[in-house]
Structure formats: C-alpha cells, structure tokens
Image 1 (cartoon, rainbow, N blue to C red):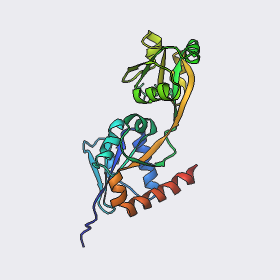
Image 2: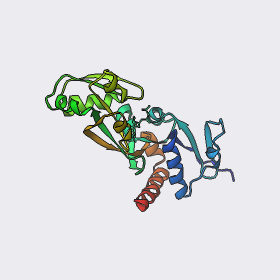
Image 3: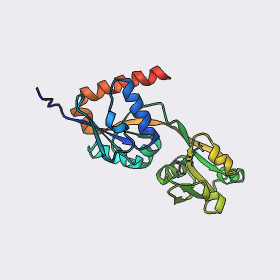
Image 4: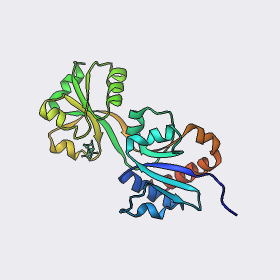
Length: 219
Ligand code: PRP
C-alpha cells in the first residue's frame, strides 16, 4: 500500500550546524543519504520511508520558512531566533554550537559602558544589540548594522564596541579586543511551526522526545 502520510519538512541552517543536526538525527535512526553528497546541486532531499524532507537554507532564513509553514521544523542558532523574532515555537536545545553573545571591544571601552555614555555599537545583530542596550541596560546607543567581520568596527574607528558571537575568543584576541559584557549563552535550537505543532502533534512530539533523549545521553 502506498504511504499517504504527509511529509514533515525540516529546514536546516547551512554549514556545521546542519552537519551536526544530521549526525544527531542519525543517532535516532533518521537518515538521509542523498543530502551527504557534497557535490549535489539538489535543494530538497527526501527520506521516502519516514516521509521526511530536508532542505538547507541560510541561517537567518530558517525561522522565516518555519513561521510560514514552508518547513514544519527548523534547526538554527539561538542568535538567529532572537534576531529574527519570528512566530515559531522553540522546543529543544540541541546542545551543540555552543557560544556566547557578548559586547566586545578594546579594554579602554569598559569605561564607556559603566557610565552609560552615548556610544556606537556595530553588530550583525541589531535587534539583539538594541534590546540589550535599550531594554536591559537602559543605555541609549547608536547601532550600526554590519554583515560580517564585525571585529573591524572598533579597530578602524567605526564603533566603540561590537555585539557579536564569541566561541573560542581567538578572533577577539588576535585583534586586540576582549569580552566586556556577556549578553546570553547560545546554542543550536529546534523550532517548530505553530500550526504543525497542533496538526502533526504526535509525530513531532515523538521526535522531540527521542532527540531530547539523544541530546541528554551525550552530555
Ligand atoms: C563568528 C563571529 C566571530 C567569530 C567568533 O564569525 O562573528 O567573528 O565567529 O569565533 P571565535 O570566538 O571562535 O574566534 P564568522 O566566522 O561566523 O564570520 P563573520 O565574521 O563573517 O560573521
């Protein structure tokens, strides 16, 4: 008999996060062989037996696909979830991709943070930066959006500090910068479309349960 069950679609943030997600899914018996072919130009990958589909997307687009229901489930960094502010359910911390969102700069910028001075903040994450400075610290700042290599900001005089991800800290160190304040810890998270969570409740809850067991088993 033909399998009439509807596909559950996963949107995975491209790169290391997707590789780690696929490795975790494999541990609970969910495999997708064709996605492993690094030379393929295909965009959608299917596991017919389990009625699952996978696609890779740019990280910031993952919550968008999930909010609109183009994907039922997404895996993306907590930084992206906080920045994109999409209406999705965040259901599981996958425990990898651990890093921190921090205010960083030269040691000399510490003073500027202490006295709530009007400073310039460069970041790839303007929403997170705004939320931190305006709502948590109650400090009025000028936020400048950049798209990468944010550490350049204080070095070339564009900004006083940056709000950025720190993982090992080596990018900061090599550029004479340091963590000045920690905003929040980050890691990979699983998100679910709000309608899918109701319509496919049983399948999705079972998946979350098995993934949680696998994550807890490795920590
Ligand atoms: C991220 C982040 C930092 C760096 C932190 O950049 O923006 O620059 O990694 O890692 P570390 O603490 O281990 O040195 P990414 O490599 O994603 O590129 P980008 O600078 O273009 O954003």
